[in-house]
Image 1 (cartoon, rainbow, N blue to C red):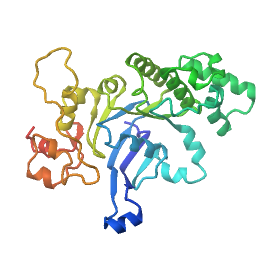
Image 2: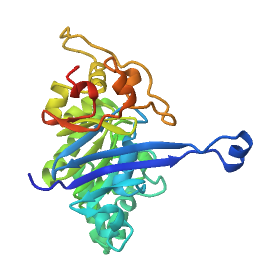
Image 3: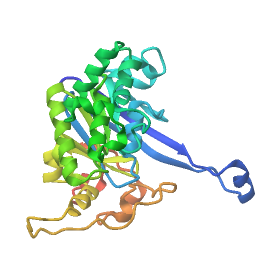
Image 4: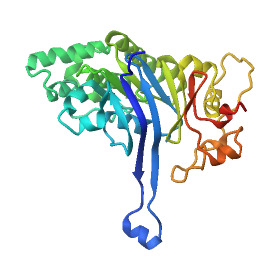
Length: 331
């Protein structure tokens, strides 16, 4: 195997969510911190898609923002093609690196400037990176990008409010593709769309990946979408990866109890009759996470070791799992 395009090592992000200083003094409360991402490691091969899944609040979107440099990591490194992104984005090579990686945001209604025409929205990265300066050439390039996502060149003269949600997300994809990036971070790009529109947007993204050799980090909580687009799947829980496996392995034979619970929550349209355990309990308060394995309060296989010792993410029969029960053969 060649070196992965994207490598993430021990990535962590801690947010200070304390009350103002005076409130803490009057109420005698300590400072509070949230470990939004806590020691995440993974890699993505060029031209492949890694999907991150998990319940809301597990840290998926924070990982996305850390990868593209919108947040600075508290600990750990992100490398794109062997280049440390944190150091590069702080130096003179920032613009060249930003051309190579772009992000598609979750909400197509909030991510587009309502006062700009589509021509200006898609043309902005081309101007900012100095790729095109001539007005007519810029106009032609924007038309090509709109056609590549299933819209027409004449749409460049319209405003965002004149488009549906699915069309707006296509404009977001066209904007992300403007600098001809190698790596796209997709933060739940279809969650705000109707199911039929989701399929159209996902098919466009898969076609673009085949044509341009794009590498995706795809973030979603919809397992049906993940099954359609991913090559590898990482399951997150409370800021940590609990399982990383190829798509076929994860959906065919999930190992971690949390992964099993997520898959059991999918409606069984084939009525196979297999035993199913719905997702039980609530996600713990991230301000005071459980000791040991953070999933142990909801896990049917938890024992005393699970309550006291945090399981590391380790290789097990070709996949990576962070679970004492799997390691000891109790599942």
